[in-house]
Image (cartoon, rainbow over all chains, first blue to last red; front, side, top):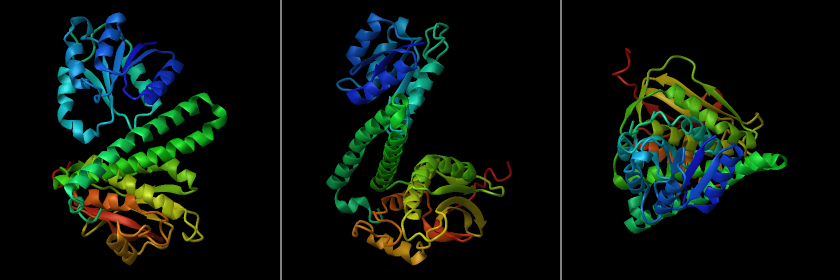
Length: 137
Length: 242
């Protein structure tokens, strides 16, 4: 079971995600901003990070640049779960995947709780080997 | 959607865009909270599934509207690529099934035969067919839809004009003149499709707008005994012999 760090600015959605992942047996910490997420990751290393790109103050891409600048966090898989329409983030997708180590991009309006749980199950285990893009190893 | 959104003025167009974007948030909350309820409260699962399905359908309409509006505002066409029309219809039918079931409408797919890929925009085509499907599901369930068991068929066939993909139903009201009149009344009448939809029929206009950006458009047509709306696509010459 994975230790999940979830950046979700909407408190009602955050509750739903946290409850569903907890029911699936994961440990979940939900934060609403980039700075809070850095603190949370510093406190306890997550196995996987899920984040919305549209955040208050610093956006998700800024967060990812900061997050990936720390060597000990470079191997942690990140899944984007965003309300931005896929056509709109098409141009940024290469940067997200190849430079910032994003392993999957979900479209929040259509991504079900089951999809979220499946993403955590798929990517949230076996991170120690540095299997993912953006990995330091 | 027939009149360019630019005719509303850029400020109103921008405001409509912002409203639609904002609507995605509560719709997502409703859908995910209902899904959570389905997982934790078995006794309410049936009701909550209705809530989730309706929220998902509304979300699809909003998303397709945003895509259509963006295309109108930018005055750009979608980039065309070879797309498998058969698999897109099958995917669309799958996505419509739960919604249709709530209205006691059966969903069928007829993709018999072998069709080469067509030139379209994959995401745009799926969005258009879904919007069309959601709109026509409700039309099959209206009291004027005839005595046959309500059914919607997603079908493809070949004509000299290209490969025709459409959604056809048991509602007998959808004639060419009804569609043309509805196009003229879009945005000016609360119920442009008398006898077909008790609402604005927005999903059908959104679908037409998206298809126009792919050098196609919706036209009334028939499939066996069923009436519906369909669009013509050109086959991909590049992949014809692959």
